[in-house]
Image (cartoon, rainbow, N blue to C red; front, side, top):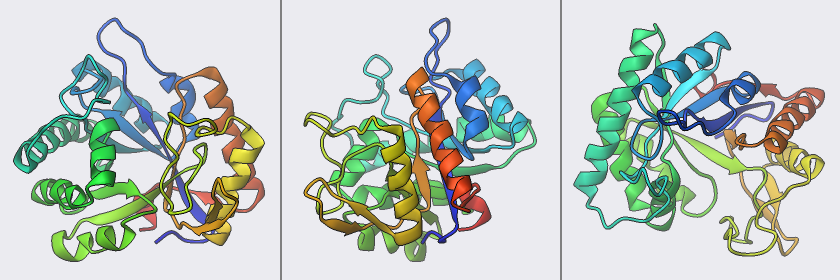
Length: 261
């Protein structure tokens, strides 16, 4: 459960691969409090992982693993027919790889946030959150699992008691919400909000009041611990900066989830 005057800002980074450059990590990482670093299955490679961990360390940003499905060509966005055991093995493999780079630089891995289709599969099938949490518990009981705030919250809230793994609930400030608290599909018009001021106001409202205005103008209870901010283009970097400025102006402290959960 989030606190009224503190929130985490997370972003997906470390998504370059070899000679291919993706994202604006140098611009984004100084503006956030937690970094979700790709682990090689959907994006990233060992050298990118090392450099991204170093960048996060330089700016005092907490590090988390961002494991995806083994789908480099599809950027981990394609659903795969996979078993719970395969999911646990894939998550364990990727978390372990990033954890090695984190340890090598004298840091501690804070959290794990599933990527793309793996995240969406867990949203659609909430029992998958516990499958992923089980993999984390076997690796490191201190890890935090990042899950979508909204539908199935009660199911997800039971995970700590069963696995010992803490859960941080996530809010997407630049995405429209349905009345049930789920995200509006990107296939529908208006799913992504581009107005920087509107996005920042939605974030502040969620932190202070624990609600978000759905697309039908109803108010949905939606408490979260961390805000996902996308920073893979110049316009988005401006958005991340705007959110940080508004939160500071409103007296809301930004800090990694590991410091207040």
